[in-house]
Amino acid sequence: MERVVYNQLPQQVAKLVNIQPQKPKEAEAFVKAFLKRSLTQKSEEHIDDILTRKAVVLERLQKRRRRERKTRGKGLSAKQRREMRLFEIKPEHQRYEMFLPLHELWKQYTRDLCNGLKPEAQPQMIQTKLLKADLHGALVTVTKSKCPSYVGITGIIVQEMKHVFKIITNEDRLKVIPKLNNVFSMEIDGFVSYIFGSKIQFRASERSAKKFKAKGTIDL
Image (cartoon, rainbow, N blue to C red; front, side, top):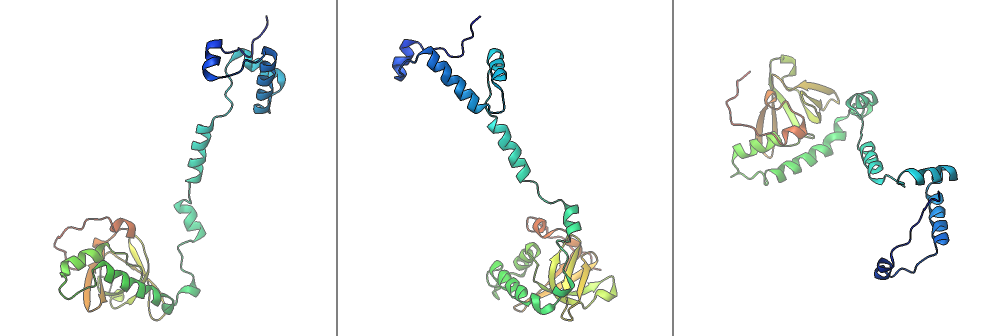
């Protein structure tokens, strides 16, 4: 039984699309050559076998692109970041003067955030904005604490985590201060703000989207 690889278009269809009719042998030769180029990993016998049984799928572009997107989007896990020590501050970088420019940037950022910290500004509005602000670079002092050894520590916040602040003091010492059971004060342009650490136990990115309610705070 003769196998037909290529069928000519009906004459009416060929006239509509303006295609010149080809001879069956030429058309069949073109189809075979095209399939041979497209299916380079298949032998001629395998190609003939495919043509007699089912349709040929030359490439699955959509599925391949989806796999590539999933692979590209995968980043480092929390365990890998800890093993690589990406967030550790090296001893040679634990110098107070290195973070003074960061503190100056934070002061300018806070002024812009609070519309210049004008004398007529409402303290409640400034306090609300500072609760959501990025505190990296802020100069803070522990004013109250259940642990007496923390009281009086002053330094620049170099790293904020969910439960702790990492502070560099002017003696070039890195202190890890828990937020819980501590009250922090910060002063900028004569405005002093007090923040209860137990109320801001969030990451900086989470805190910026948090809605803080005006509730009474239990003193230490």
